[in-house]
Length: 219
Ligand code: E4P
Picture (cartoon, rainbow, N blue to C red):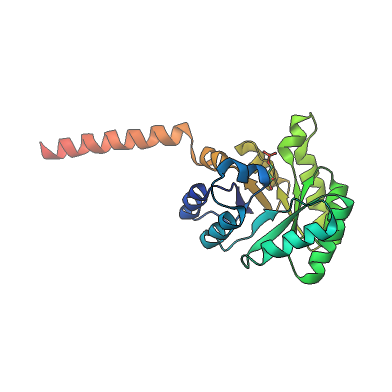
């Protein structure tokens, strides 16, 4: 399973890249607004120097020509840019046009398996169901991941299911078990996945025992 970082913060991306576990990055307007400063283009170009994996850049336009214009521009910034397009009728049309041009897309704001099926048929290479936002409204985000992953495998469609809107480490485990090809995680969730109190306690104890053994060896 691939793990993407869900952020526009280049320091976070550099950190997780150093751990050797980073397969790509997803950004969106909200994540870009959090970092501010540089232009979206400059942030994307810098991210693409850190990772060779897919880097999703989201279009803002909601008409086909506007989405195509923005997406072609993003695709020109680096080879590993994937254009993020919302799940709408016009979004499907744009995805299909991007596919014909050889530009990879990530269909975002997917909340049902049927939306994901349509995006895959239109030609999106990544399908992003929003797990956390479904859970927030008392629905089961992981059910959409499981259903869509089964549909993609059963019908051998050329697309990957990307679990997005991940809120906590348990979502990652469940998405992996449900067959998601990718999960995109906030930096905090990557950190939470690393940590365990017994790991911390174990390291502390080994240090104490080592110091005691060293002291005993000196006497
Ligand atoms: C990633 O592609 C999505 O835009 C992101 O995971 C959405 O997360 P949120 O629901 O926490 O805003």
